[in-house]
Image 1 (spheres, rainbow, N blue to C red):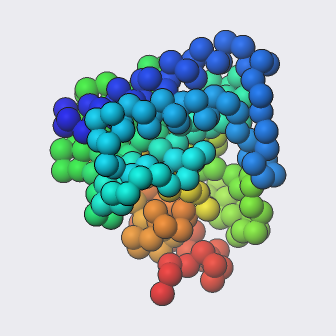
Image 2: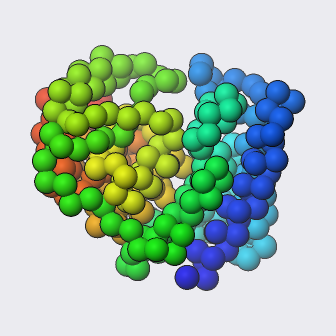
Image 3: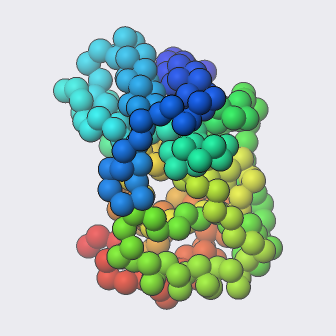
Length: 268
């Protein structure tokens, strides 16, 4: 395992200890709403602090972009992108579908990725150019050829409803043209599931970098494609993402494209 990935795994496990301990008494947590339907608890903050402390000890000059703490540090060439608890709403309801997501972006490219599911003890990892792994076993995207036979993950708009009509039109067509749609509630895990071949594809509108940075590399290293709704590279910036095996990816784009508004198209 790459030394930087090893440290990121250690950081994810440290955060998961905090999360798992808190999950045993969710009612005792202090929770506040950041914006409509977007919640944060002291667990999110404590888990993020544990991750940054672990990474900073090994790489004191690196920068950190965390969901809860914003950007810290000087060295923007090495930027750790952290979601300490992806699926907070699930967590707060006791629904066991959430994870820790950590990615390293070096000179604009994601090079290391960890997605850790403490409920199942599933550790998804990837280093750019070295493949993707689940608990040290190599994983690949599915070889499914037809969208009609595919299970596709998604996430419903929950915070910003500006694109709800476009999304509902996409969902309607995807329901008709697939074998089934699933919405578990953690985008980082959804992308890991594409990498592992448990989903054939995934799409969502308006995610944040920390939701998708690690998962995007997992899919790429597992032989899949990741793009925005036009198949371009802006997905990390816009948060509009499609990920799938290559055959299903193209069919998903064909299904989604007719419903794009100008706001959802790739930046010029």
